Image (cartoon, rainbow, N blue to C red):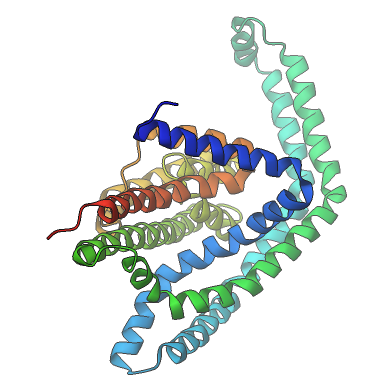
Length: 365
């Protein structure tokens, strides 16, 4: 049997894949593992993001207020809960009104879209354009689009049970996250010490530096992405209010959440605003695009360079491939989490490799 580092890695991968394959054949072993991982993934990821937001504050409270770490965490929870309640009082009612108004307007939006397709079909310039495109049956395409809109409209009621189930799962996750986050904040400082025990004593200093670099990169990326997305959401909201677009708060919230997707996220968040603007007038849709372009220029040229700190370089082609695969397997949630998860894993894997090399390096005499 061939030997060498490369072949040993291949043997290890084959063994791991074989174990996973055999596990899939035994449902009572593999199914609980899949359920466990899928159930804990979302709360652990969200708690990890909140850890990098709250941990600096907890450190400041323990340093300057001389509070025990557990008490500082509880005090921070109370402050965060108070701010959340205040935020809900301020933006909760208008956000709810806009959401309910949008839901009530869905039949009208579908009808207006149908009329828009019909009016386009009656335009002479559009018919000439269609005639020049060989192989496109506009009548059939219009019928399919109308049928799809009707199916979407009729499927809203039948999907109520799925929506209720999703809301229940979200509620359970919200309940679990504070407990996971509490122990992360309380015990998180012990994790580096545990890892350093695995290294030779002579390499402890270098190992501590590697862990500090990893923590800084993760903190810079997570905090930077959230701050930049919040800025984009606020600026888009102000722009939508200025141009008097319908549902400005709801559409700005969508733009804020999708902005965490690099490269294409800002334009995904712009699409709902363009649709709402187009139903008002083509000029309003143009104003929506102008607002988003101005906000993105300010964000990319002034805000991101100041906030993001150390950037995690990811090639645009890698981003596109990640989004295609993640969107195929996990839909919108996959698009939201694909690139941030890849960026975090890239930091963890690269620094873990440095730690592994350090652990296996010969001890100095």
